[in-house]
Each structure stands twice: as structure tokens, then as C-alpha cells.
Image 1 (cartoon, rainbow, N blue to C red):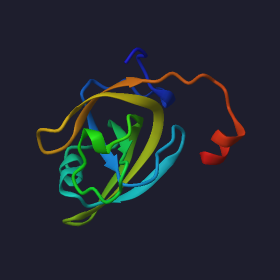
Image 2 (cartoon, rainbow, N blue to C red):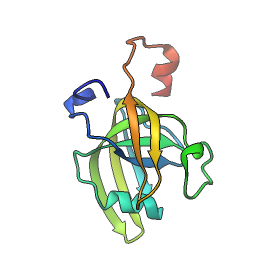
Image 3 (tube, rainbow, N blue to C red):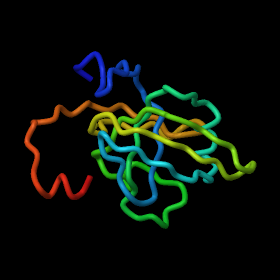
Length: 136
């Protein structure tokens, strides 16, 4: 990544980044998303996170895939700051993230208890379209 900080002043994280695949939906920069997390690899990731940590989210192409690999994920994702993590049961946690910046996936590491990725932070072009406003 070229910039030394992300939107909102969070420091650019060291790579590779912890990666959370999203079954459906997209986390946009500047928005906040609260989601339930229950897949084994995602739970392994959550157990390593603290509020303030920066991760990358990548949306799955097909929500039904239980354990997504590189080809199951879109290449454009979002750098996200962890706002809160709440354990509801042993297999159901709630995670709140704030989107910081868009990022392009360059490499995905699938070994280990959870996914990690090398990403390139994408610079915003400053153009705001009506469609982009509606999507956010």
C-alpha cells in the first residue's frame, strides 16, 4: 500500500492482512456494518482481533460456499476497522466494522486458521455519482 494511513487516520496495517469473507453484501468506505459471524475460519479470525485492528473484507461471489478460496472472492474489497466484537455463544459472534478504504486483492494466503491477504489500497478519484450515493 502506498499511503501511510487509511481514511479516518487509522495507520496502514502491516501485510498480509487478516481477511474476512462476506457471504453477501458489501462494506463500503465510510459506512458501518454489524454482522453475525459463525463459520469456523471466521471465528478463528475473530479470536485474534481487538477493537481498532484493521482487516480486509472481501465479498463472496456465491453465498452458499462454506469455505471460500481465491476464486470464490471478488478482487475488490474494503479495508475495515474493527469497532466491536461480542461473543453471543461459542459459535455465534457479532462483529461491527467501519469501512475505511477500497482495496484490490493481489494475493490470498489460504493456509492457517483463517484467510490473510496482500492488498493494494485504491485511491478514491473524488468523483461522486448519484449511483454511488444510492449504493452507500
